[in-house]
Length: 80
Image (cartoon, rainbow, N blue to C red; front, top):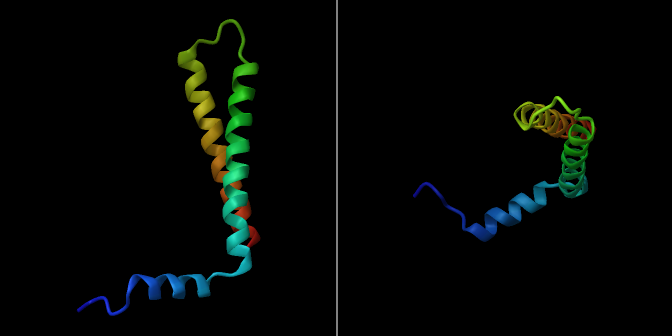
């Protein structure tokens, strides 16, 4: 007896609580995060020198990608 509402009532309540900005931020985050990850991978690969190995490039690219994801998420969340 813990849950008193159906799934459809829950979804209706959730959609009514969301604003237009919530609907706009979600696809914007998806697109910008994808763009930032792709750009960070390209920058890491194109900035590599002859002495760089895949073992040194992988952590660098991963760190740049995660930093980009966090930056995009924080900036778009701060706008709302």
